[in-house]
Image (tube, rainbow, N blue to C red; front, side):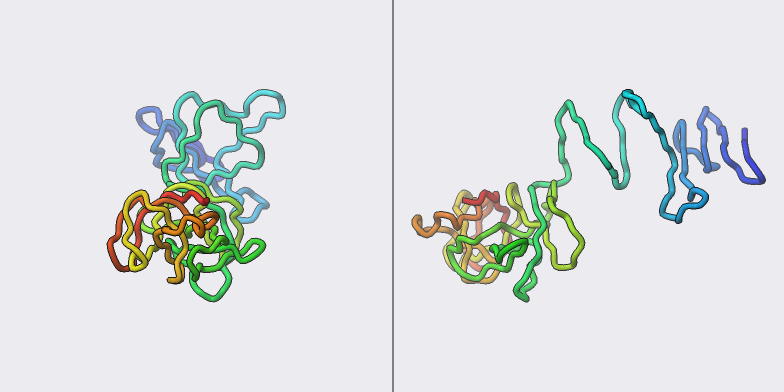
Amino acid sequence: MIIGTRGHEAMRIAPFGRVGINTSKPDATLDVVGIPLKGLPPPETTALRATNSGPGFAGFFQGKVGVNGDLNVNFDINVLGDIKLVGGADLAEEFDVVGGIDADPGTVVVLAGGDTVQVSDRPYDRRVAGVVSGAGDLRPALILDRKSGSDRRPLALSGKVWCKVDADCGALDVGDLLTTSSTPGHAMRATDRELSFGSVIGKALGALQAGRGLIPVLVALQ
């Protein structure tokens, strides 16, 4: 059955009880396709809107809810259960990168004042801030302070991340403490206990006997 207005198909009841609104091929029990609302610019496309000014819910779902796209929330989110971030491995915060050296994922950076960081270039630097997130197969699970800007980078503050290391400063093994090195953007094994205080990035989760490369690291600033 097809219901339309002024020559436009508005709703269709397809075989097996599927209902489509603004679609002739409903793929679910109720399939609603948004169209631009009259008088509003094209981006303002709302497929389904529910409003409740009282204390109850505007909508209630019993069971799993899937969202394939961005979810925009203007107010609070109340959660009774756990929040599971299954697509990432670290907690990151965005900073502006200064200094003229590109800080690609895996690069070790240090504080440069205010909301800025720069690529590390000296050993045991107590300004160490973390590792630029996103190298290898690890992505940030949560990014704080996101703003527009081509020079902003997500900086892993805690969790697992791939990190650039220089094993020519000393072979690296699982569990080694890491600090900044003289090789720009690379970490090295921390061997000086006194200098390590305040300059440790975290612990190595992988090994590298010689040369430079990427290894997984557990970020834990100390």
